[in-house]
Image 1: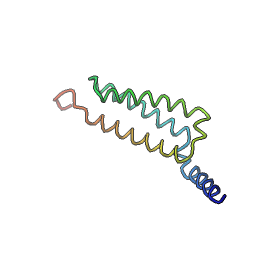
Image 2: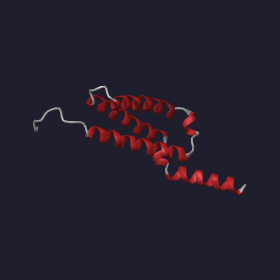
Image 3: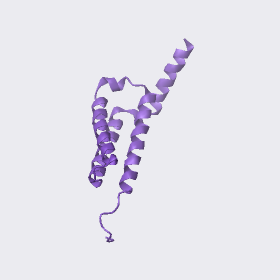
Image 4: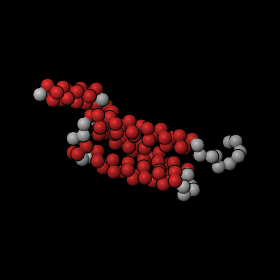
Length: 111
């Protein structure tokens, strides 16, 4: 019984501590930002490569995530799962930005 109470107290503490990061609105905003970055990155990578395929896959998963944040199922997720989701979205955003930085410049001229 004490273990159950301790788990419940930890869950409440995490929800209060990370409420800004794990709220459905903040996750949805982060997902929208990721979707916009993926669209830009897809335009920058004009060649049909593995990278473009991964970007399209990211875009489709982000759309599914945005739909999920509007449902009650998302509210039932634990604070730890939501925090992991937040960290995963931030990591994906950083990877997309790195990918965009590595694209060769279209011309040799300095502008």
